[in-house]
Length: 239
Ligand code: HPA
Image (tube, rainbow, N blue to C red; front, side, top):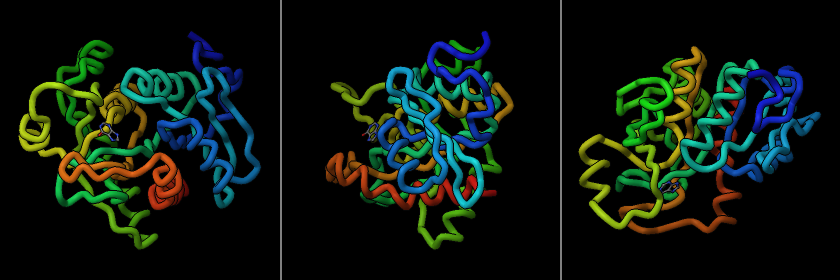
């Protein structure tokens, strides 16, 4: 397959930066581009999965939505890595806390993701249930947080295929058994793609709700409160 791909309309790879920040929501990609980047061009419109390339302190950076769930981030990250010459993707997302130590608005630097997903097995014949992010990028994200004096948690998260669940006890069955701090729905597929394609992937998550205390943020608060995470990702992109 060549470019353009079925999901990205750009006809030359060089409209994308080597580093791509990926929020789930394409409107958050727009917000980041509007707030932090200069000399911005729009690089994707297909399915409203907006992507923008600009500069941050002179460094070329792309921000593009991934959509929700492993099938969606699986498609976009694969195409960016394989067909558009992207070298590293930093997911910046939200998560539900599984731990009393991870409070609303806390930022987690993800080391690895546990998942029941069949993504890596079906796509690549990989049987593992735990997929690691790229160690050097993980370290870079922690260093960036440190330089910005932003406290972060670090550790394993759960990448789930389901948001609404009517059976089982996810805290006992997953969180405790596999030492997961929080739940989201994308990292496992992103990490698998990076590993297979020889690229780098990292992930920062902001806690948007708690499966322990049942507190939650509104979508407006969520939109506005993710600055810490965005700034860490942008700082790490400068490296
Ligand atoms: N579950 C799955 N993904 C999420 C959640 C959640 O509670 N919160 C934010 N992303």
